[in-house]
Length: 107
Image 1 (cartoon, rainbow, N blue to C red):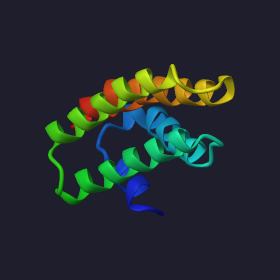
Image 2 (cartoon, helix red, strand yellow):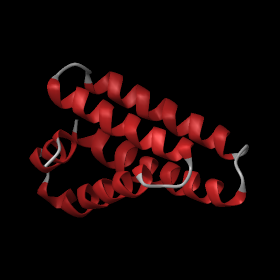
Image 3 (spheres, rainbow, N blue to C red):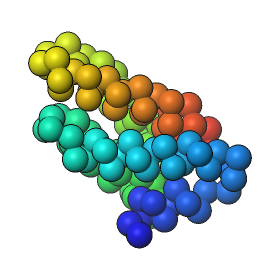
Image 4 (cartoon, one colour):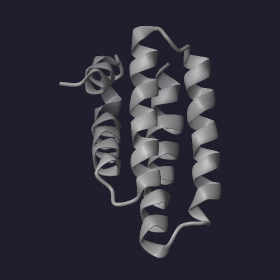
């Protein structure tokens, strides 16, 4: 298992197990996406989560980075072609739902 999934699995809130699994799937899918932008953002979220787990990033810093990423993704989506736009939209929606509304509440 990766440090990313180990960290998510270790979070105490068992009631959010489905959201944790959905977040893992979102990142795996985004890392394999055709869009370079989407792949890079997935790598960023995974990297920041590992930094958070290692104590190299505070929960507040993590929240700020992810919130900024959500805004950046919204802006970047306007520039992409239709297929990449759909992938970026799914990533942005997933970040909002699983990271900002879910994971950040556990921190």
